[in-house]
Image 1: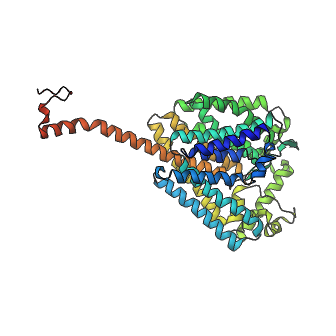
Image 2: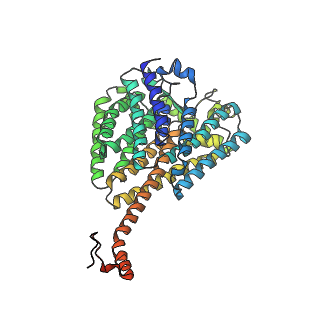
Image 3: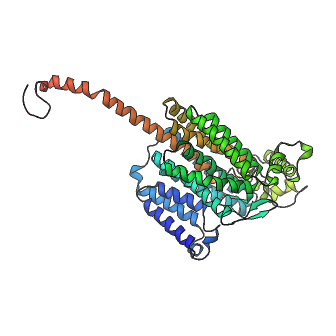
Length: 464
């Protein structure tokens, strides 16, 4: 086993043990397996993969045990959190019925269904593992560090390979190829903005600042047009949702990001590919034109089978291939997240996923707005960054089939946890203020009624 593999297993075991007292460490272990799974990285050969090929399942099992052992201290059930749990259940049930009743190609659909319901279960456990604002910050930092690890492996260790001027060979559960890799990494870049803007914890801020160039360089190597648009949208969202001094800092960070891109994007193919987003129909490259053909075929398929055709039905099923046979007679991706979900799990499946993300953003927006009213800028930035990350990922999903990626649900879980924790904090402050205001008067009244006001209460024992 390599030294990296040894460090990996020691860290995973350490997080698992720590989670027995603080479940958030199990959530961090779950993130660790996603970003640095031994199944997908070079250090996994030998002992790690011989122990098991299902490290993600092991991580979920640890997550379940940690929450079971601390069940008495579980978070209180608030209305937004209850809605979130119900939506996760409905997503799983919808996928169950679509898979068993309408799947055109059950072998592929079963794989996707298995990932979906387990992802929903893991997300529910993930949500209840976050029990304080410090827990939430640790989870967000884990996303940044995970992306930083990937960036380190790509930029400094030479992982992956270039194919047609784009980085390939990097895989995650639910994302692969240059587009999927760029989308996953862009989450870490956006979330890192919170730690850099606030510097509440200098170590967290420094780690985020050090990770950002590695992540940005990796994204540029992926050369994904959808990711470029997603990052631009996220940057705009951060500036729009931030308030007061935070907005000035956000604008400054965006300017710094633009300067970094100008300095790092030396490959002309990056600019050529980015500029191709805005060209006319006559000037589109073959990739962009073919993508529009896939989208049109998927829309027709959804119109014919609105209740769904099973997981990845567009276009990795015999039914799906028939819709693209006139220009590509083979299994292909639809390259559009919403169309992929609607074709697979039906328009109702797309509606449920959209509802999860919209309610998460709405919940976080209401919470951050209250934080800004209370002049709580730093905590308000948590919601700002989470909403911006979701918006950016939604834009990315318009150009690649990632809307069913588990990280979308993580971001939603963070939004709902953020709302719950901030409300709990406000309630505690309210209770404290009421306690500070009332006791003095109540105590005086009680003393008068009992006749004890005649006695010295300073502990001397003498009567006035």
